[in-house]
Length: 465
Ligand code: NAD
Image 1 (tube, rainbow, N blue to C red):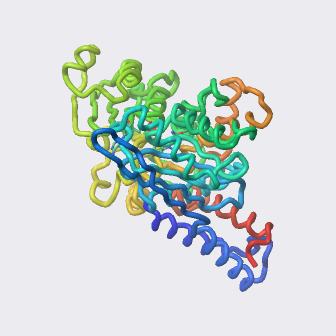
Image 2 (cartoon, rainbow, N blue to C red):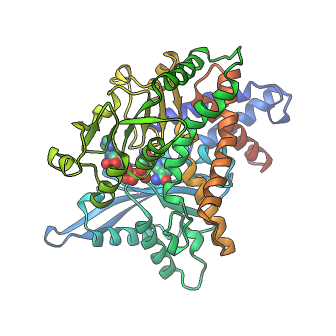
């Protein structure tokens, strides 16, 4: 979903809320409409967009000036919060869209944070570690008035990791001597005050969103009738029966980084809901084996090479059987479940009819266009949307930020159990609404719950007069 599509969905949902008699306790229709129109105006626009250029000397190749952004969408729920990505496709519209989605995601999961996002227009694979260190430090220098533990708290995202964040924290500490700095960023290394389990959190939460739907929520309600979403209900019945008959379901995973590799591992290791990981991809290749790939081996290779094996020679060295296909083929190979964990705009009008999976799980942000989302809805497929699925990282970030305030360390199991419990509460609210009382997409349902909360906060804070 692009920025304009996200803004259009905000408008659509706000119009529905404004028609609801009694919303915000306002009985007078005219008054409610004015209040909701004001909330719509605030939430579809952005508080602040900051753009800067980072200057890097590339030795013999001279100086480059790299565009960098921090976008703060809204902070009615709490301090601005959102990752920083290093990617060659970063642009203002993309970063703004991701900042809006952060506001919605944090509100949906009832976290005390608003929404922000950062981005630097670089392909990190083309820069040395020394150059990336310089870019990280300069990012903090450029945006220093706008970030901080009680204002805007960045984290890692696509193309960044705990090392980049540790560099940024180091620079923040240098710029602000004597001030507390541990809460300025989340996603730090554990040695540097990070939360145990942060790296795995988004991938684990992504897998949990699908597993909990099929294996817990559906199982418990399997005998119930009268659901609103009958086609999607049949999809769950079909997958449940397939699993019983075949003994496993087939999963394809696009993107084998932080989110995708962990989600693939969770599916691979699940002893109750069993899976064959038939395909995984990265920016260069898809590896495909209808009998299943060994995620342990791929993880080990990814750890040392930062990518998937790309040649028969590399596969032979790993004693692994797989066809090497084009990167985009992961979307169209036969699978029951497709986990999207790479980048935006992967499924749209041109390829949506070729997607065989029955459930699509958006670990990545905005991988589907609005048109594709509605198409899948009409064809009985289930799309579990990004703002519901990939909140594990920000929930654990919240625990990390809380931990930095009390200088106390939570154990990995305390953190991941807390995250799972928080996410499950939100899954239940969303799945109950979607299957039992809605005729809209699951994304619409998530936006509805989030915007209801945001509008209510704006109203209570007296911002809608
Ligand atoms: P990452 O950089 O660790 O991994 C990204 C993976 O996607 C890599 O395997 C890369 O090769 C692949 N990829 C990159 N460009 C691609 C392209 N054009 N086509 C196909 N594959 C491509 O990133 P990550 O942290 O795993 O993030 C993945 C997605 O999840 C992003 O959309 C990010 O915004 C979202 N997300 C991440 C977190 C987090 O905690 N890391 C939290 C919420 C959402």
